[in-house]
Amino acid sequence: MHDISDLERRGTPGVFIASVPFVSAAETQSKALGFPLAGLFTAHPIQDRTDEEMKVLGENIFDDLVKELLV
View (cartoon, helix red, strand yellow):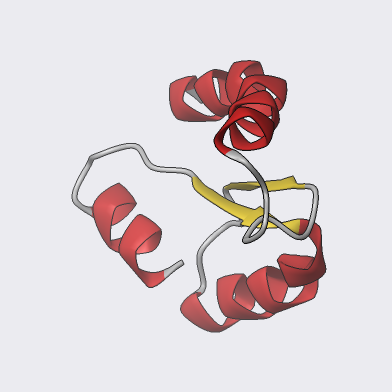
């Protein structure tokens, strides 16, 4: 969240990606930084997924990622 807000303030679009259990933490950080929540959330857990499973997760949010970057 800190990196994305820093990039945005410098004029570089950015979107963070996290898994669903981190929604609350992301909202809290967003408020603390005074920065709008610009992120996407995917299924959890991710650490034990295969490369193919990770690819599917990425494909599932790709269009939303591009939309967020173009806002």
